[in-house]
Length: 217
Image 1: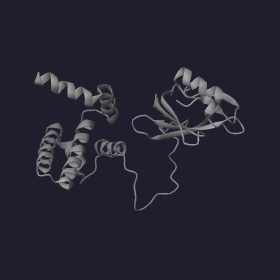
Image 2: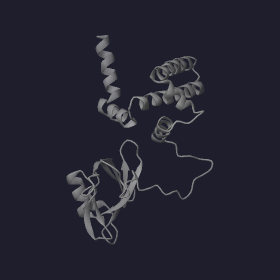
Image 3: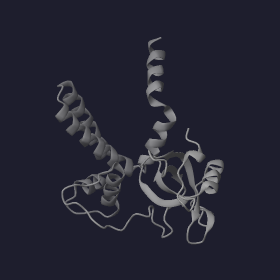
Image 4: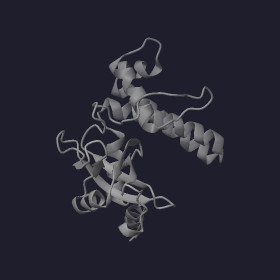
C-alpha cells in the first residue's frame, strides 16, 4: 500500500482527487485534498476535501446529506493524482446533477461512449415517454407476458447459436437477450445497481462451483 508521505502534493500542499462512482465507474467530480483531508477521508470513510476558494476543509454531503462513501483510493503512476471510487448517497454536483460533467464541448460524429446505464435510461424513456413506432414502447404496452415471451425466444436463439459454434451469431443473440432482459427489469422496477450489488455479494464464481459440488455429492 502506498503511504501518504509517498504522494506528491503540489507547492500548495494539494493533490487532485478524481471522484468516480462505484459500479458504473462514471466520473462524478474533481476536487483537491491536502494531507489532513486525505487522512480524514481515510479515517471516516467519507470524502473530505480542501476548498481552494474558502481555504478550509469540507466534507462532501455535510450540508446536503449527499455523502460519498469511499470504496477505494488509488494513486496514479506519478503519485500526484488520486482516483477515489465512491458509493454516493445523492447527486455529486451542487447543482443537483448526478455528475458535475454535463456541459458538452465536443462530440465525435463517428464514435459514441456507450454504457449499459445509458441504454437503461434510453429504454426507461420509452416507457415513461412512449413513442409511436418504437419497438420498446410496443413491448411496454403489450406488458410483462409479451416481454417474458421474447426473453424465452431470445434465450433459445442464444443456445442454438452457441451450439453451432458461431461466435458472431452468438454475440448478436446475446445482445438481443440482454436488451429484452433490460426491458423486463425496467417493467419490474429492477435497476442495474440491484444486479451489481447482488453479484458483488455472491462471489459468484466460487459460489456456483460449490453449488455444483454439493449437488454431485
